Image (tube, rainbow, N blue to C red):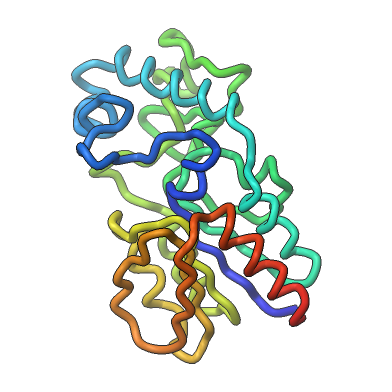
Length: 229
């Protein structure tokens, strides 16, 4: 089976009603990123940060996968698929994809606030401030904040380097280090880019641009790939 690697960004989740991480005004759900998505924000006002992610988690659980998520799951019929997502929701999994790497964590799990490797399932949508990990430290959302390491970036780069086909869906390639992953794909490998606004990827080789929103472009491309295989 050919190895098909898909890098997804906020654009695919936006079509399920989830706000993109950084809107055009620089805010996320009306908040400054620095106030809710940094270790310093947690130190200053952990209750506010906890409430913010509780509300985002509630929105995620109420959202439903869209046609693009379901189409990507179909690819597993004929390809060895790895989805690398910048998104912190679980919509890929709920659509049926079985091999999903979350670069920036996943909001439906909690983690220790002193050891990010200690993660736990969440019962419902809320983490309470009195919930602690096995080390006695408060639990927080299992999400990578600005200023924190992205532990999965090394394995993700290797997966991209081994790809036989690469797809970029719904990402402006504005957030690093994730934005650099496309440069690890071998230049002779076909690279499909699906987005209403095609980003400047700055790489040479086969680039097939599909200037559509994810729910239109992804199902069309998936049908083509399944017929060709």
